[in-house]
Image (tube, rainbow, N blue to C red; front, top):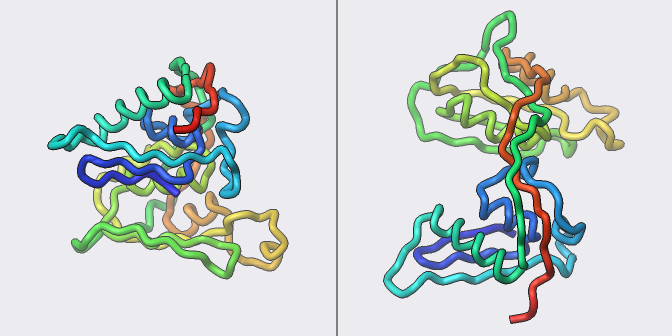
Length: 214
């Protein structure tokens, strides 16, 4: 599943319309709303997942931004997509330094990496090397289920490890001693999540149709 670009060819496989729109307009999922229910279907067995093979003219290698604009035109043509843009306040988190100060380790210089893996079936772990806080919040936002804004004032590159409980509602989580993500950030990194709202540019799908067969 996903979108890949090789030279002048774009390949999208097993993608819902919503994911195609999000990619075309360079959006996170929370910035997209509206549209028919089938457009958001993420089931791997759904008949409303699409594959796209798109090739640029011979000798041309579009930039990623040019490919995004080409995808916008394709969606308007094949899905009859109609959208409008809207700025609105949405729930978010500010990431700030805890009272005791950060416990992040400044990097000694290495290749940048953020490795992820499961912990005891119910948890998740990130092992980061030579990353900025801005790099980290982009990834952590996926697990916080809302955008995280960097308000730490930390400008260096850091190494850190953090692990937390992914979903406290599942049965196996009852016996886990892993903390929630906010608690993990505070206890393990000296950083704190504070609830807030912030204005975001969003896209609203006004109309879309299933495409005709090729």
